[in-house]
Image 1 (cartoon, helix red, strand yellow):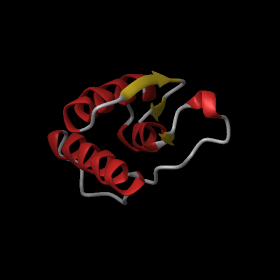
Image 2 (cartoon, rainbow, N blue to C red):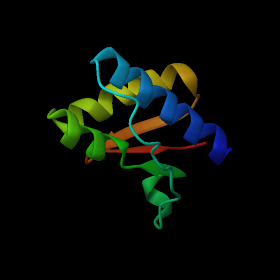
Image 3 (tube, rainbow, N blue to C red):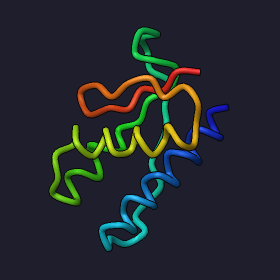
Image 4 (cartoon, rainbow, N blue to C red):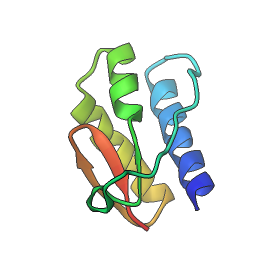
Length: 87
């Protein structure tokens, strides 16, 4: 499951980057949060990409969450510019 989510996150990031004329960039990681209340999986992709692109991380995270919602069932929330994904 983690591999499937990581692939979907990276596809969403690649799509976002391409839509803004940015290069391919590096793959982003998906991790398992230490606290279960923070979801089953998380990524800091929005924080990393926002800094590079010069856009607000929270806005970028919401855009990624919307795209992920089309790719994965169970995208639960966008909080503190992190994307939390629950199975």
